Length: 507
Image 1 (spheres, rainbow, N blue to C red):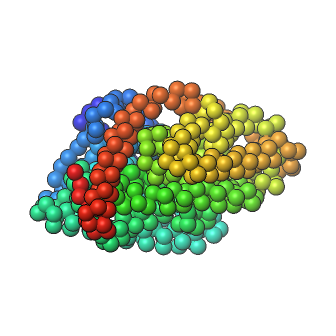
Image 2 (cartoon, rainbow, N blue to C red):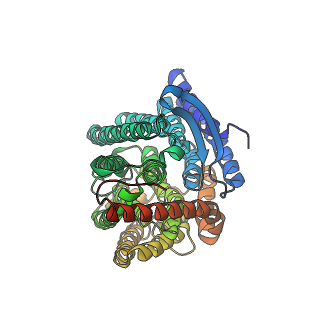
Image 3 (cartoon, rainbow, N blue to C red):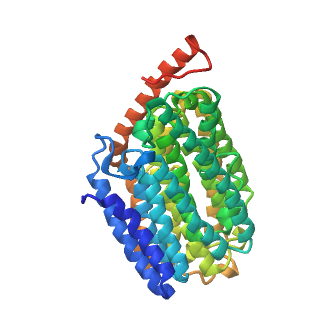
């Protein structure tokens, strides 16, 4: 792969998106340009995945000094932690440009800006650079919901903005603490995660900074009880924006915890792991029960997505190779299955003018291809063996039992709720007696079939041949867990025996 591949997949969509916003273009032309750019990014992403070794740490690295006096650098790289998140961000965007054809150039421009900023956050190995892209990726989401959203878009946008700003300010304060601590201990500035792992943090300030990071990422995941912006945000956002929020942006929250929080705050992470594991379980249970009560399919999927993010987050906090590998695998599995379900609901709304379950029925008899694709994505979402969703959830539950048998039992039983409401929704929408509104529902056309076939095949392929993906992420997961276990054990022992509650020493 060429030397600056990561920079290309970041800045090609950003610069193209800015051009679409600035130049007077028709919506159709902007959509075509956006589709071409997203396909280019897709092919580069596939090349990066195929060429990824998985056993040599960071790959495809780029490094340039940015603000030398503060140790801030333009540093990029991909390892097993970021690989599948990056693949999801490159693989799924062409579908959005292909399916939704009636938006303005501003909408397509913001889509490209969001993609580039997300890829920037995923590929950054410098904490300041990560924060810059983290902030940039929120702006196009704000505009897409606020301008193109539903009837209650203003309140949904306001709630999302308040949560986002609060989380960003907490993260910024924590970053400043981490940076100044590194300067005090080593006499120089650095925000590179490889350097920050050497930090020795202690006492109340370390715990406070850890919790600040965790709250910022918990809002984005979203992790219970920081999820309350999600139902309105997902429901009122245009379907393409909901797709981005669920399929990619939420995963960057999980990625941020693994990439930047765990290596710096091992002891704090270990001490609070049980608490955050229980929050993941609570989110699975609460959002699953809330989904049962929904009559709007999109809102049901919003709660379903939050529930499934709970089990992905659980995989992070179990601190073993099985759970972390399952988490990284499930990031891609959830992005493809739940993301595609949101796109299907968007098509239904465009053709029928409603998302209300009570208004729908009998779609399988009028659109068998649509129903089949929907069923595959839905079954993957609930973890049917032979689909991508089963592998990730199985590994996470296995790791959860290894971590704490009670938490593993709760996680496994809570998943049953998702099976219940998804099958109930599918039966009502696709197989109950047809309604007048659904009589004219048209099946997928040739272009739509070509758009969805790759991701449907990926869902099945990940379920049947999971080792193709696991072999690229497991070595990094093993290194990550080994480092966490060794450092945490020595630190906890030292803190408890020599100076409890005060100082942490890294090997």
